[in-house]
Image 1 (spheres, rainbow, N blue to C red):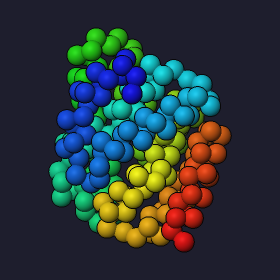
Image 2 (tube, rainbow, N blue to C red; image 1 turned 45 degrees about the horizontal axis):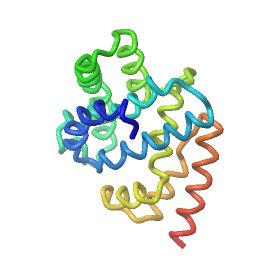
Image 3 (cartoon, one colour; image 1 turned 90 degrees about the vertical axis):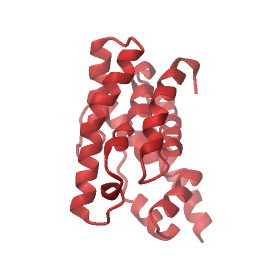
Amino acid sequence: MKIEFQKIWDLAAPYLEKGTMKDFILHTKYVVKSMEMIIAGEGGDASILIPAAILHDVGWSKVVPELQTNSDLEKKREAQRQHIVFAKEIIEEILRQLDYEKKDIERIVSIVQSHKFQDPNDKEKQMLIDADNLSDTFKEQFNTDVKAYHSTPEQVYEYRTRNKYYTKTAKKIAEKNMAELQEGIK
């Protein structure tokens, strides 16, 4: 990770470690990697998009564990909603500590709050959704998700085939990664 973002990572990591649904540290590393790859192919403001990638799941730290791991669809949706709501305060706190400008904090919060339940037209919001979905197609992340969700590789693969991508770059990388995962499952 670039030095300029290390301070954000250091402040976000304790929140990410509190999430119980999956390994949010590993997941976030792959979201950042995915975002870097998407920026390389699509362009974009890394000073906004990389912090959004690092901070996108900090809200899980305040969602009760029983709700995070619940198999009931309504409770899963509620957990997703809560992690988005809780993220705002945490992101604002972290970025204020690092003297981010108010307009940049608001922009990052807006991007993060749009990564679930929305079909945004804004390119930056689409890029975070793509990075979040793409992260789960990397082998190490995929394998930890199989364990975290108490599923088979086939079940997780099938679920990942439903991911939607907005950018050409993410689509191309996802196709390659999914082909490799499928080959490994056979």
